[in-house]
Length: 65
Image 1: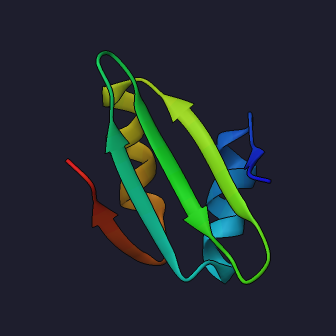
Image 2: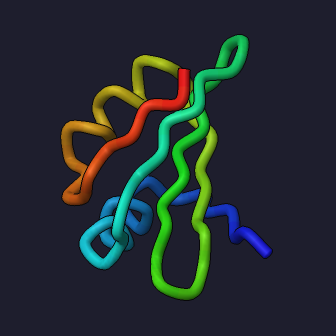
Image 3: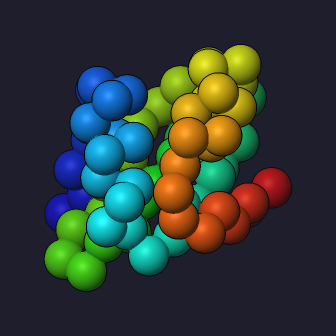
């Protein structure tokens, strides 16, 4: 089961041990998905705040437009 994270700082910390970050753009929000060895972590953000978070992510970024 995926686990939704509400805190941006925790999401960025999880990115240090993730293999990739997938970016899914929906109508008015952006969903970021971090794939770790065991769990898929997700967070929903607005488009502007998602771009700021993506600059801080420390793993490979895959865009699923």
